[in-house]
Length: 337
Image (cartoon, rainbow, N blue to C red; front, side, top):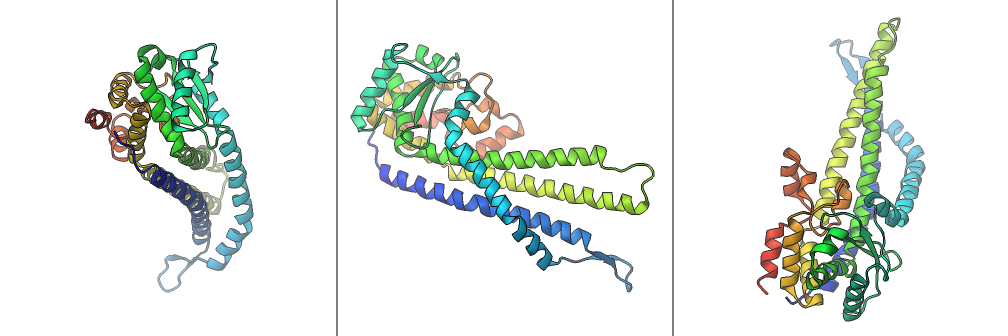
């Protein structure tokens, strides 16, 4: 299979990474402005003497004042969070998956395969990690030469022959060469930040529902105030949930399924044996996953996405917005060459 368009793919991933970097702060700031606007609108109410109905008004000047006041804190907090996660992602993924460094002495077979493939394409050799897990999977991670890593499971090493293993590793090396991993790590961090914010809002809603109702001695005015506060919290929860959903879907679109086809093509060209990679994908598809690591963000990195992570309606949604193409289609294309 002839692999073409690597520079185009690299340029595309670089542009998409920059787009995510620019878009994410805008979404966060937009959400905060909406939150402040809702609070202002719901708190500025008066009774219209002609109709007797309560009328709410939005004071945009006040909203903008508070928005500009909290702007440096929000941007600073997100920036610090992003920097920590961006440069600590390798350790975080390693801890989440239980991966450990694989030495040459422990498994010279893997080292020889990786070295030969790296010399063939003229790239620096990445780190090699292994996960003690009978299931079959592999993934590449990292944002630069010092953090690029190829991780495989012991189940994969035990079941695949040398040609099949070379095809899988070549696939992962192509992800690194195309800078897919940098784009994936960026999206994982962003979705993680939004998910955390959403969980915080849910906790706020929970505590407000169970502990924010006030005492029995509360006046009617206090009860009304608590009711308004409840509405604001619920609205904030809905807004944050909508933003989280939107950004997750946007990220899935940004991480095109095409990247897996490109990595298959590049891996097939690099190892020189498309049928071996097709055979490896067929074996992996029979038992993909990483034991108890049921995290959708990390699953985006896998060579084959474990569909068991999504069930029922979630499985239907995942099929629509999946970051991985159908494995049977990938195998069919590889077997054509």
